[in-house]
Length: 215
Image (cartoon, rainbow, N blue to C red; front, side, top):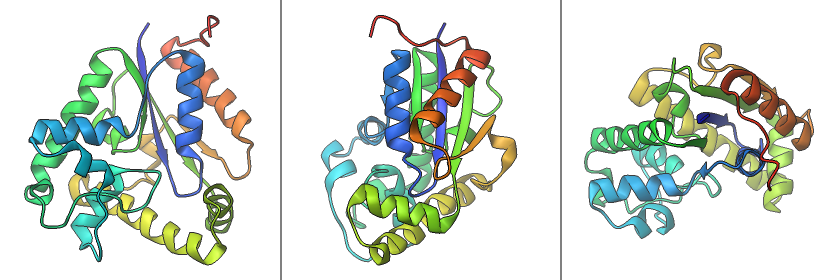
């Protein structure tokens, strides 16, 4: 049985690490960096720019869109003058098309991209939110990225603002809307393995997904 797990993760909650581990254990695909590449291809722009080009002093919309370009490194995206930002609605629609295609086909684990909103209400989707107290997330983010607390605090403010702005700008929804999720976990208080175990149990209960014993 196929199914999709969406993960909405605040800064410092190890969303990418947890999502990748869940996908590996279930024997399904993990979608993160592949999504902006697919979107870039739909918009007929350079996929390399969509995930790898730095730019300085982005405006609000550029920050919002860049938050989707690479969830592991804040504000990696395309040049502010690029055609990628010329039509935000085209970006949104292309992203939604990619997300629905994933869910309609083999499914997988999708990190971010407002996937909990785009795929809301589908019976073949489990939506998860990873969050935690700001101070704990800053500490965990600093440890994971091997940076100091001041740098992590700056990243936290920027990343959380950009991701919330994307939700508000395009969907008039908030990441903190409890109605979007079947499961919410504080991954600063619970160990990574405990979070993985709980999400896999929920995926089995809702989607019939089981750990791939062949791995």
